[in-house]
Length: 422
Image 1: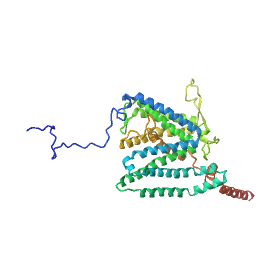
Image 2: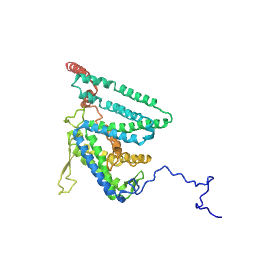
Image 3: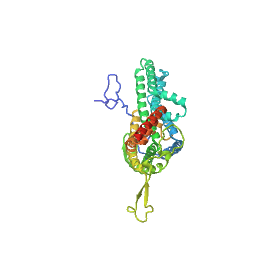
Image 4: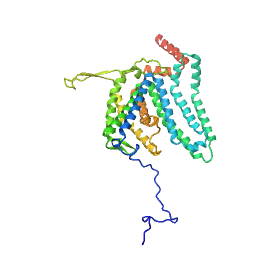
């Protein structure tokens, strides 16, 4: 029997060859920048390293300047980063053809974004704003009234956006519009809930913001260089260029730096003191027992020729080890999650705003996981759980108006006078 010319492929009624449909899963390009090969085999690795190093120096320099400027400027930096992250995430599901058929629909995303910003930061910083405006009687009264109805105002703003969304629904565009609506709220949850912990940590003391951020940066840099020079064994399929050598080397480096950096940062009141208002002045306070050095004698543990016979350790350094452990082992899973997320949407990076790094979201994936842990750890294991005079005074100053504080002072004076005379 004669075989036809298509190597035995079965014929179809239409006379055409039927091919298997290709999978929607993107096949990684082994030779490309987003391929499955490790960095150690990448021919362009030195060029990539130089670009990445150059942009990292610029970022670190700007970050140090903002840290020096204080709590309010650091919080403003977090807000700017939130806006860039939201922009990158909005663009992931954006379709230009559909957007052209829905003029003004894109503005609703940003309307919900800034409404959520007003709600989250209004509740978080309300009493600090009142403490800042206390000397001016008129402005203090105006702001106090606005804060009293803050939740109602934000809810009304959200309902207005909700009604606008319903009124803009267009036939044959329902699926796209509801998808955008759900995606917008998902972004608000991911960005705002986690970033709000970051701002809360800043006002508890820059130390509790700066140390976790620094540990993530150190872990990222160490993982890159250990993997760059020694990486041979792939770590996880979601991120093919991550290696076990880079992961282990970065973990050890991060824990060591956590202990050392905590000792250095903990000796500066500017970093250790909490901020109870929104001013930018220099801080002077008693940072508490965690930042007071303790002496440890080494004479029985080290040889005679060892130059240091005792070391000074801050109690907060032991807490820093826990932060370092989390930053090196758990926080990288935020990066793995982001890698899987990008693969699902078939993109290499969330953006291209940082040369050699991708977008802002690419740099913030691990930071957001770390920010939540740092705040929860601080509130659970560092803040005193028993009630103290200082804690009561802080609650009075942050939650009572001037008139209520005066009434409390008068009433407390009467009670003490009665007890002393009785």
